[in-house]
Image (cartoon, rainbow, N blue to C red; front, side, top):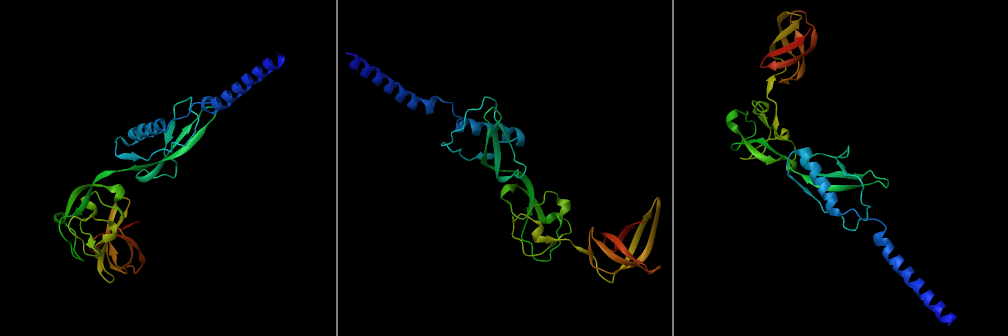
Length: 235
């Protein structure tokens, strides 16, 4: 009799132990769902970018992160780009903190300057050679221009096809001063403006600093090219 009761009690204890072991991994803590992590990323990017031009890679469903008791934090890591393929850090600041990186792809649409028609090598860019086109610049390699004033009088370095996005690699500044040219040197000293004749000792394009010689004093100094045959020096 006692042996039967002992056997029944032992059986009940074994059953309870098994149930406890089975239930513990599931009920120990709630899991942060991948959907909630993606939602945090989506809300952050929508607010940060003021657009929905992004895609979020799937969050690994095998993750077993404890459900955060606080709202999830999402932000760009310091090293992360804000365009193209990049990452967003999602973190939890509760008693058992965690953080993960989520891969995203961010598009950015801008009106960029393109070739209105084919442009041969050596062409001088005018306003009639360029047109604006809306492009996803996250996929543009080599840079781009958005302001026509940046391109006017630039020189084509190699042939450009119609519709091609104009980039710095395709163009170079127009040479405004050649070595040996006579130039006019404009010097500013307080409210006094002085103009003297000089000679360029280097080739130069707009905004470039070149060496020039003052033909009166024979002194050599650096001046900035501001237009064809005109350089400026601040006294």
